[in-house]
Amino acid sequence: MKIITKYFLTFCLMAFTLIQAKGQVSKLISKNTNGSEEYLYHHRKANFYEYATNTRPKRIRLINVKKIMVDGQKVQVVKFPGNKALYKLAATSFQLICTNPDGSRQTFLEETKYVCKGKYVTEYLYMEGYSSEFYYDTNRSMSKVKLKILGGYQHNPILKFPGGKDNYAQVMFMDNGNIECKRPDGSRQTFIKVK
Figure 1 (cartoon, rainbow, N blue to C red):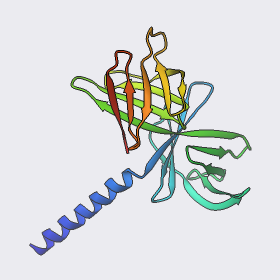
Figure 2 (figure 1 turned 180 degrees about the horizontal axis):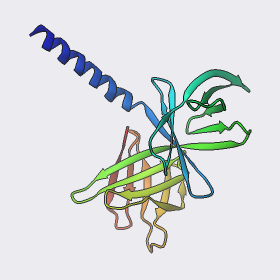
Figure 3 (figure 1 turned 30 degrees about the vertical axis):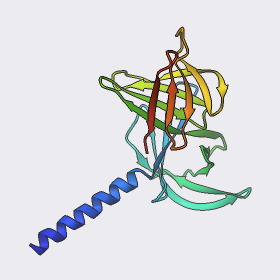
């Protein structure tokens, strides 16, 4: 009986650790001119990065080589397994600048996901960077739609679907990190931030 209890407690501890670590991952996106997307997943607690693309979604864990200081900023130097080329990753609040081995630079923006579960459909809002771009998606659609920002303020933009007649919503960022959208008909919809 002691052995079963010991294994059960070990299993619970491992499951709790995995669930907690899962919430400590931020997704960063770089959109290329050819339409492809590159993703970096930063595991904050374990301090490592994974790389993937929209055409190759399987993540590759990057190897941490060293940390250096460049112009007063901490820079993580990483490489791909089996490759000697070094990449320098400099992170700020909502973006990451990657200096490639050839000296070119790439900007990765942090993606924040919000969800609103309705009776028949689940809707998603994605924000890239700090209120710079919004995308809309549902559990029934196949791709994200980039919403147009018509005006408003940085913390309270007015969004519209491309080709749509009416404004989709006026977005209000709430103190708890969620988003409330006020639709043209006056109804309100809350999108919960996915952690």
